[in-house]
Image (tube, rainbow, N blue to C red):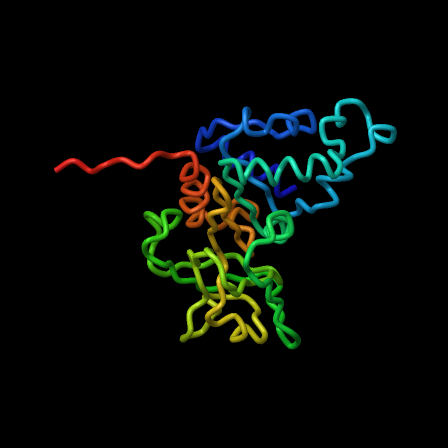
Amino acid sequence: MPGGWLMWQLDQHEVDYEVVSADDYTELGAEYDTILMPDGISRQRIVDGLDPDRVPERFHWARGVGEEGWAALAAFVQEGGTLVALGSASETARQLLSLPVQRVQPPAPFRVPGSLIRVQTHEGVPETWGMPESWTTWFDNDAAFRLLDGDGQAATTYPDDGDPLLGSGYAAGADALRGLADVVTFDVGEGHVVIAGTDLNFRTWPRVAWTLVANAIYHGPSEPVTLED
């Protein structure tokens, strides 16, 4: 379902895209600049996929690509591709590329079962171009991140002061999010990775976040330009 909402959003903004199929894993770098993974994409779904013997032929494009395909996805990034992973797919990206980040799931009584939580934007990160200084993300018992030693850069973090909850909703123990990151970017080999602990496109509701997602899609394959006076 998250993939379907993401495709609808891409259609609305007339983004040129193709759904990655199992056949594409032999030449990911030749076919794609950026791979966008929606919430719900796990290592198991990539490696094992759907069993062709148990589903109609029209679904065979989603069959598993095995360990060879898993390695091919990592090589896609290391050789210059961009990977953008939203929601739980961020953990998949962390596993795939051994990203220097710790996934933090605050202990009980922490519980935020679908509420708008404040985040703040960090300047100087290309993915946040055009974003407001402070905005909200849809948080549904998601995880947050703590950067470890490495080249990671926080694009958005949960603020250190004020009420984390904005507007209506339920957020028990949300103070545990203070200072943690939601969106983090990395340079990996010749490529680039953007992960978001929350689903920035949840049912297309958090429209403010689409600017960040679009920036992430296009930043990796973009080329630097010099501003003329």
